Amino acid sequence: MSDEVWRGSVRSWECDEMGHQNARFYFTQALEGLAEAGAWLGVVNGFAQDAECRLLITNQHSRFLKEALDADPLYMRAWIVGGGAHDAEVVQILYHAHSDERAATFFTRMLCVNRAGRSIPWPDPTDPQSAEDAVFARGLTPGDSPLDVASEATRPGVIFSGRGLVLPGECDATGRMRTDAIVGRVSDAMHLIMALCDKNACLGGVEATASAALECRLAYHRFPPVGTRFHVRSGILAMTEKTRRIMSWMIDSATGDLLATLESIEIAFDLKTRRATKWSAPTRVAALAMLVDGAPI
Image (cartoon, rainbow, N blue to C red):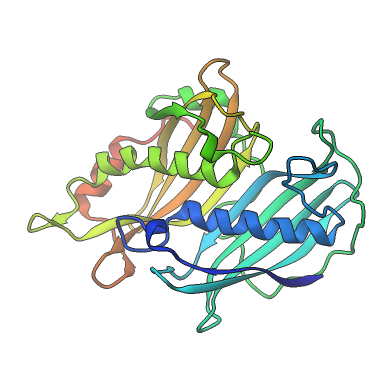
C-alpha cells in the first residue's frame, strides 16, 4: 500500500541559522508519517499512551535533496517495502507541494511491539510494494554498523560534544525520548565539531559557507525516559574536498549504555548561491587534523 501520510508546511521557528528547515523537523514529519504507515498494518495508534500494539523504530536513513524554506508547503508519501511477521521496512518521500520536487527521503525499520516492548505480529499484515524509483542511500549503508558500540566513542579524536537531560517536551506519550528529539540533541552537539574546523571558512570576516547535512544513518539502541542524564561524543571519520563524515554516540551518563548513534555526511553549503561548494583549505586542514584514529569505516 502507498499513500499520502503527512501534509503541512515549514514554520519559522523550525528554521536554523542557514534559513532552512532544521534536520530534526524532517524527522518530526517522518515520525508523524510512520504513524499512518503503522495503521496500514493494523496498529491504529502506534504511539499512543494506552496502545496495546505499538511501533518501535530501530533504524532510520535519510537523504536531504532540496532545502525547505520558511512557509514552504510540503507533503509526504510512504511505501511498505519489506519486512516480516513482526517488522516492517518503510520508505517515505517528502515532496515540495508546489512543485512535487523531492525534499528528502527516509528509509525506516520498525517493529510491532506490546506494552512490555516485546515483538508481536502485525494485526493486519500487508504485502510489500515497490517504491517510486529513487536512490535512498548513497554514501551511507542503512542499518547497523560496527561503529554502533559505545567502545568506539573512546577512540582518539572523539570529543565530548554535548551533555544534557531528557526533558518532558522531548518525550512521547509513554515518557520515552522521541526519535526527532534524539536527532535534535545530537545535531546540536555536532556544532562543536563544525565550529572547531569551520572557524576559518570566512571571506572578508563574513561567513560565506556553512555545514549542511546531506545524508544520515541512525540506530536507536534504547529510548531513554524523561529525566535521564546523557552525553554525546562526536568525531570526524573522513574528509574529502566536498564532504565530511561525522559520527556521534549518545550515551546514558549514569549507566554508560549506548542510547543512539548518528552517522552523517555533511557538505559545505554556500549561503549566497544556496548550493553545495568545496570546503575551504583551512577547513580541510583543520578537519584532517581531527580525524578519529582507527575507526572501522
